[in-house]
Image (cartoon, rainbow, N blue to C red; front, side):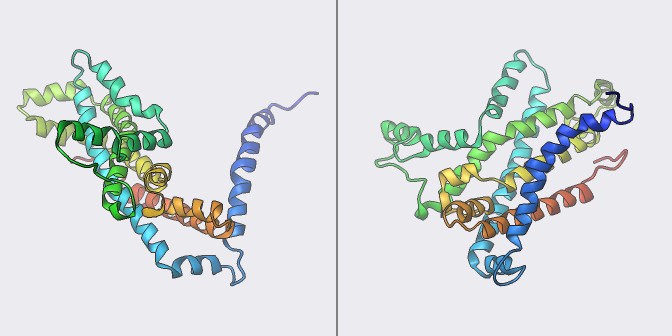
Length: 282
């Protein structure tokens, strides 16, 4: 059977289109149907969701975690990228060490953190053996939510900073060495070279890293759920709770759509307000 040449590209796209329809399109349509189906009307699930203080608490916690984790990751990744980009002897070993957490899932990272900060974890045993404390320090539990929060932040920063680091390091490779050599001739200080040359060239990479990490941080689930459970409720965790514990797919779908909506707003804000302009300088 002979096919016309102009049909062949569409035939090659069929497997991809089938995948998108079956595994993305159909679940998305079903999510909308479930979220807007209620005995109290199309918006009944959302009205019930927002009528309780629990939703606003989960939204606040999610935004707080995102607002703390992402700036810390950006600053740390930028410093590490500038350090590794100096290409000193043995810098490749440092690069591999920094990138190790990329191979870990959020579940693995959470379990490792728990083994460190548990009542009889490595940290408490170390401090007890040295005589710095007389009884274990508790980091987990409803009464220790502040400590749980900072353990979550520490875990996320350690686990996901390498992703931002790799993106920024790749952007640093685009900095022409001749620009830096010319800056040396004109007597630029290290800060002036960074502000006038390196940072403007890095802006697209920084935007990409910020966008990716903010979206991932806003959808955080595994680390928080394993370390704190519902002690620190978050949006993704509540969607999981309503689906698996309460068996209410309608409320779970409503939470899922809110996560998607806020993610779209964040993406739009980044692209609109942080988009680097051509030839811009810091």
